[in-house]
Image 1 (cartoon, rainbow, N blue to C red):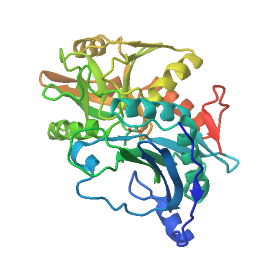
Image 2 (image 1 turned 45 degrees about the vertical axis):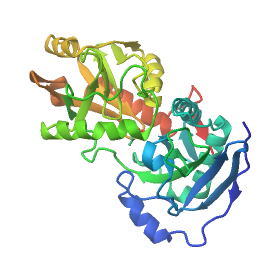
Image 3 (image 1 turned 180 degrees about the vertical axis):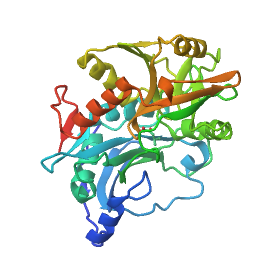
Length: 361
Ligand code: COI
């Protein structure tokens, strides 16, 4: 695998300071994009080439582009944070780069070298540094690396050319309500992933498959859908696009990686961070029956979801066809909020990063 040098072609018309500041005052999530993007091409027989940082602009796509028809697409999400001294660092970009390679293998796409992935993110953040929100709040710059097939044709086969891109978007809170417990619907009619499928890959198809179930959850009065396993419909897998954690007093338990779950970077981080804070963290299996029983008998004290975009989000009310129950009295749990604070403090450069998770630019 070769690593091409990224050629810089900065925009001659970036947004003005005033326009950018108005956006940063209330960025929302995924609504505004910075002035630049990185693109790198891959062609069979040639490998990675034509790496460029250019002004952010629409792509021109042939109607017979293979991605539009057969969804050979993968993506990542990671964040850059402003630190107290004004410098900027990204969180565990190497972990995202390795997961991107794993997703690429599953989708029969070429693997981007880890160092190229990190360099592409670095170059974009350096160029668009002014878009990284100020230190102090929870806002950050969300980076969206992704890859699409660019071959034109309707034959069903791996494409012979691809485009890797990185775009960036200033991000405030993912859930508009702030840190407020979300209500969840246990999906018995739809599954997200099947054994041997592509549940572990970060690919658009998994998110497309989630939309109808998410709409069902909304129709049941819930904020989010919770996925169960595809075989027995009883083992808890994920919540929407996030991993789940169950708090049993001093122990936190997260569904084990069984091939149909996404190996979340935040999920992985919390396995270590919880131990640092003196808690036990384990991967295991939790059934819906156990979820309800242990909540009702008081041993399961809190449940939370985690992911890059929304960090850590408490789960409040849980609903399913057979009834409903509530975690932690519908309030954000104590350990949930402690882990959330500890993680954000490392990401924002407030507490020391003893695991080398922050990648300083
Ligand atoms: C993330 O938390 O990074 C996600 O994958 C959610 C995203 C699809 C908005």
